[in-house]
Image 1 (spheres, helix red, strand yellow):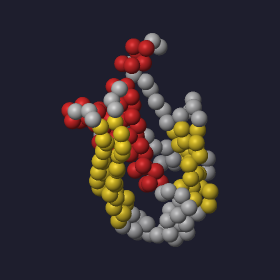
Image 2 (tube, rainbow, N blue to C red):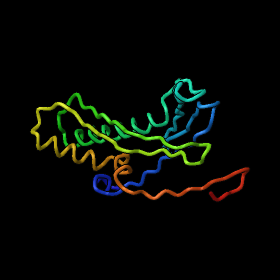
Image 3 (cartoon, rainbow, N blue to C red):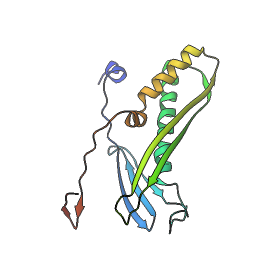
Image 4 (tube, rainbow, N blue to C red):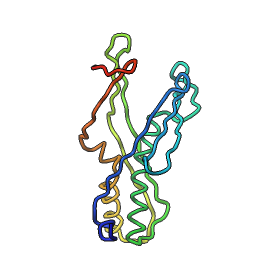
Length: 166
């Protein structure tokens, strides 16, 4: 691939995660890109869940942090490539979820209600230059795109080693 294709071309990225239970609410995931280093991530629920110990971030915490880190990575990417001088850059994501219903009645539901994304930075650059950086960072973040657009999901389920329909 030549430099022009790297700058203006397409790049396919596949990220995976395989999660398993350690014990109770404690979970681990092996995650990353198959052709690079993979990481072990631990998660736990807090004491608000019977048996949760709060020994690691919750899965939703990772989800929300991933959005903030994705946007912030794009800010750094754009600033570096455009040679913009920025400082104190931060992204704050607040997610609002609602849990309703009953597991025993079979009507339990978890729903994402709203995401708020705030981007902050300091710079001597003009407002228009920073506004364009911010617009581009939002547009380039895969995680934010996943929230904003309907993305197809395929499901597969298995019980005792054989596929089942749910």
